[in-house]
Image (cartoon, rainbow, N blue to C red):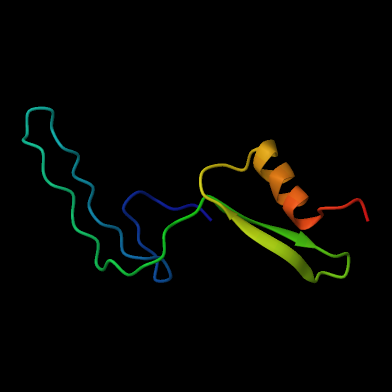
Length: 82
């Protein structure tokens, strides 16, 4: 389905008008968050699943999904070759 510029369909959240700051306008302070008791955001959540679909282990990666992070996660779950 194509969406036309400025079109807002009933199931989509209302779009706010984007007013970019001009180069000579003074800087505005960023808005305060609605509350300070929310969870931090993470880059991704990785899971290890059995062939039947049961989750064996999971972890959150804060910055990236690098091979080093994945290998460290696998090493922490499977500490021995058995």
